Length: 514
Image (tube, rainbow, N blue to C red):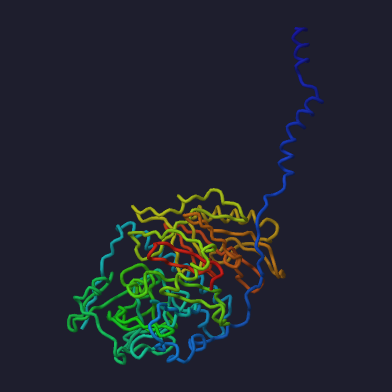
């Protein structure tokens, strides 16, 4: 017993030994704590809050010019068509304020994103086929772009001449639909629009499409007026808006004398929904009746647009404006800035053939790749039509698959650290906001989108941190979605020339090229 006790005492650690052991164990931990924080990369953001003053109301003439003869003057056959665009905020209701317009915009955006997700889910469930609804009844050009924030579905408007002689029509840009249409007299049911309703009886180039014509068979939802033998069309949108009427061919006129004859358009006599101010819609999708497809023989299969910030329509600038371009010039901006252009393959979803899909493989925040996000999380499954990422002009806020968004959001919060003071709660669909009140300039973490093929698109800070009120609250302008499809919206596209190169089947983003 005495021997055992002595051995036990000899093997027991002394207090001093225990203390030394504890110090040795804590050294690595203390060293880890003393390491400097991750070295993030930052942008400088001007923290200008929303104005509380009413938005000045303007009209199409003040943006596009009142001299229609000069706008659509026949200056010869151009190889390029360019249209000027305006944001729908330029046509805001009288006395509307910036916070009110933002609230309306986010509400419309939620409806559109939800409709796209529902359409993707339905296409996957039905193998992409849609039953047509039959209704019965008795080288290039460019144009300016205007954004339409407060009216209708779709955020940017373009002025187009319709018919012979050309009558001006303000049309919504939409890369998520195919049919080109406008309201036509006589109207059985029409909404209020900017300018006069188009009257086909006053146009020498208007021609109804016969029921047996191949153009009529291209409609997803069409029919025939058997008494007249003319084709009928109908298009319904996810927000409940609908247009229906006669399918016809007509001449479209653009700036600098570009005219395209025999374009299939919908002449809508029965229209309702959220298209306030615009006369109709310019379908820029990938379908057989979209404008890019119809003008491809003359101007090629490429087009591009550049969207400046949504306030540009209120303060037109000759050096910086939103435009939509078809023809040779659509690729010219990318060709002269190839070192800055980021191209990625264009992906087709056979079950959602209208939309432009791109392959996003990841994100970086503060210069560091976001962990937990891989290409697999955003990949399109061609067998089911689920997943994938759509590049869309009509959706404002980028929506990402929920796990991807959570990883990106947490990475941004970590990189923001103590430099940005969190604002309690969220705002509408935004769940990450910061209080920048009283600060003129702040440093914010960089954000880049990585595309297949190695392209990395670095977003300007105003494309992902936006003001939401007059007090100086700024929110991370992306959101999560539980739907099957992710969407790259137009807020994140601002300032880039987005090139849809149909011949090479690729999409490009060229920064600072508006």
